[in-house]
Each structure stands twice: as structure tokens, then as C-alpha cells.
Image (tube, rainbow, N blue to C red):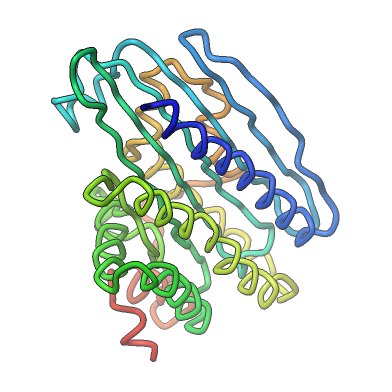
Length: 306
């Protein structure tokens, strides 16, 4: 049963990685992704694709992985105790793009499938995924477009999904130690197995396919806006928050490290440059202060920006 479920999911994910890399490379106009294939000692492997020093993207990664093993990592059993004693297969595509231009947002997307088995018991499986936007200088029309694409992708299945997954994204991508969201959100879901397998798989595919529809128009609108050292330094400062989230709160990072995943691939989401400054505060009334005062708070963007 597991192979029948796993094979089409894996084929879709590998094709999705190809499609996203091709589209982002074309959007960059000057750089191609380099591929680094790898094997995991405990079982499985993947292919990490990196773009760097392009015309548009300072650095970004689009990774596919399929790992499996006989023992669940502690991070997974803490989240789902019923998985103890099961072997597992996990596969997914995960990406983070860090543009040069501070007016082009950083973006993240991930879609994944997990299945755990134990002799004599039914397999436990679920899908997860989503995408979220982290602007440094937000534009309302970009946020509205981003969330509308999210809603459109999910409404085809159930109009209750977007508000549920939107709230989940706001809660998950929240820096508790900073009391702020990572960005302006999007959608996030995990443990999706309350629907028939084929429908759950279709929802995951819809989310994976919607990422380019959501991101590329924003990139095209903002990539040629002029910027100076002030905007660049603020971008680097805010990238520090991205690092903090990935290292302190992200379950995917912890799962990858605890399963003996490839560290370089797990941490390819990090920006190439970032900075921290003790007790830095934006001047009131500036675009920089608007980010933290208004945009880094969970809001129903489709209502407040309509």
C-alpha cells in the first residue's frame, strides 16, 4: 500500500522541483541552478539546487528529498506519539528565495508527504505544505495578490480551507521571542489525512502549483525598483529574523537534523548575508517602522486590503 501511495507523490514532487527551478531561472535572467545530488546514510537522499549571484536572486535553494528509516526522530514522536516504533518515509520539496532587491520579498514554499508503518497495523500518512511571503518593504497590492492566489487554490476543494490554513500559517510562522510574524503570511497545513488519499494529494498539488502564480507577478512588479544603502541595510537586518525563526522554531529544520539529513541541504534556506544590531529601532513614520508596527501582525488581508 505504501509504495502505491508514495510513487506518484514522489514523481509529482520531482517534476515540481524541475518546473519551479526553470521558472525562477527564467525570471532571474542571468543565473541557472546548480544541482547537488546526495545520499543519506540512514536511507534515501535528494537533490539540492542552488542559485546564487544572479541578476535577481542573491541566493536561493529549491530542494527535493526522500528520506526513510527504521526509527522515528524525537521531534516527530513528540508531535505524534502514536508514531513511536514505526518506520517512515518522508519526501518533499522545499524552497526559499532571497532576492538582491529589498523591494522584492523573500518567499518560502514547501509541500511534503509522510508515511509511517508498523507490521500488523494500518499505515499512518499525511500531507503538509504551504507558502508564505516575507517582504521588507510591503506593497498592499502584492499582499492582496498573494493571499488571493492562496484562497483560489483552496476554494476549489473547500471554502473552509483558506481561513483555516491562513490562520495556521500566522500561528506557525510567528517569532514568539520577538512577538511578531515572520512576514505577511500565506497558507500552511500539516497532518492532512482527514480526506481520502486522492483528494488530500490533490490539495497538496494545488498548493505546490500555486506558488509560482503567487510569487512571479510580485517579482516582476518590484525587481527594477531603485534602492540604496538604507534599504539594503534594513533588508540585512530583517533577514536576521528569518535566521532566528529557522533555527529556533522551524520543525522541518529540527526533523531534518534529527533524522541525520544533509546539513548543507537543510540549511540552504539561510540568506547569504544577514546582520544583527543591538536594540535597533526604526524611526517613527518611516517605511521601516510601518513593517513592524502594521504589517508584522496577523490580519485578514483579503478584507483589510479589499
